[in-house]
Structures are given as C-alpha cells and as structure tokens.
Image (tube, rainbow, N blue to C red; front, side, top):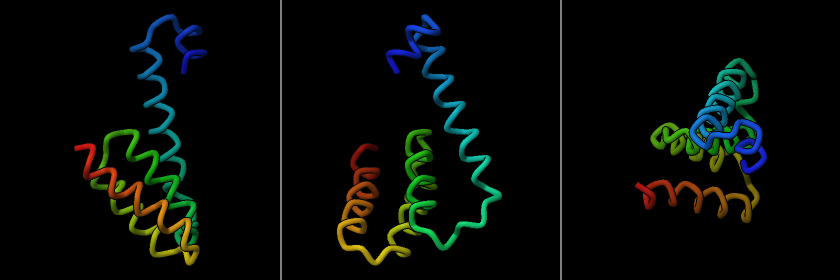
Length: 88
C-alpha cells in the first residue's frame, strides 16, 4: 500500500483504487464455475470482508468451510468468519 501511496501521492486515492480493484476481482469471479472449490469461496469471503460486505462474507466463509475436509483450513476459515462479528 505504501508503494501505491507513493505512486498516487494521496492515501484516499490509494484506498479508493484498492477498493475498486477488489470490486473488479469480485465481478470477474462471478462468472467462474468454481463453486465446488473451497479456495474460491475463501477468496471471495476475503474480498467481501475487505469491502465491508460482512453479511455476504459470512455466507462465503460458510461455503468455504463446508467444502474443505482439512481440519487446519476449516479452523482458519472459522476464525476468519468469527472475526467478522467481532469487528462490527
């Protein structure tokens, strides 16, 4: 982020650019047929969280949790989901 601030010279413009990038990433992922992959839902959850769309992020974390059998990954995703409620 510091590099972007140096490039743009403005923290607000930098933050707006980052938010725009997250939004574009979400839009581009909408058409992908990756519903069965937990990482797809995990990445969407993180993007949604960063955009402040916590209710949608919770659903995406739930989808990711439901699609992984790995205990460590499931625990991480559950912590991330739980942190959404704590942040608000």
